[in-house]
Figure 1 (cartoon, helix red, strand yellow):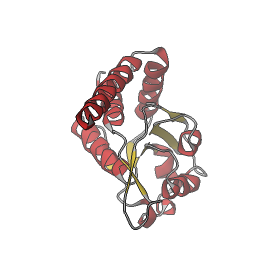
Figure 2 (cartoon, one colour; figure 1 turned 180 degrees about the vertical axis):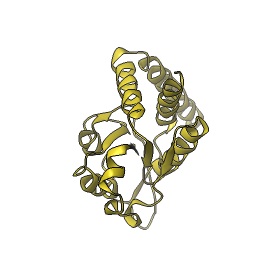
Figure 3 (cartoon, rainbow, N blue to C red; figure 1 turned 135 degrees about the horizontal axis):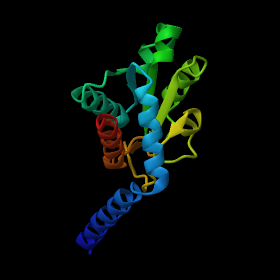
Length: 183
């Protein structure tokens, strides 16, 4: 019986990934990707930002963009890299691409609060349009998949860790970079 449940969960993931990939052909996703590409074409650098597993995806995004000769860097630790270190001129020439599954990561929200005061552009790739980070962004591309968490510690049953797949976020990053690189 337990194996059937595992198989069922795997099948559900495959179905959800298939639905997500199909949704990327929808006008709303295509339009959002095209808007992000247009924004990036007006900027001199892309700064990636994320925390937890989303920080790893941000790192991947900066490397992927750089591989396509798109100037990109990842902010390694937002809590130790104050937003006020950037000049107003740099912020105006930059686009922040923020990765977040929940869209509710406290340190990222605080960071965005500081840079929102400048004339920088913020793009977010979050699971939902309804999240705080998505609402703070100039444009959000949601991927709308089932969020998954696991209990992190037996000692602290309230503490959970996000294990939601990052496959949609990776796909969207690559789609944006490839579209940018077409011309």
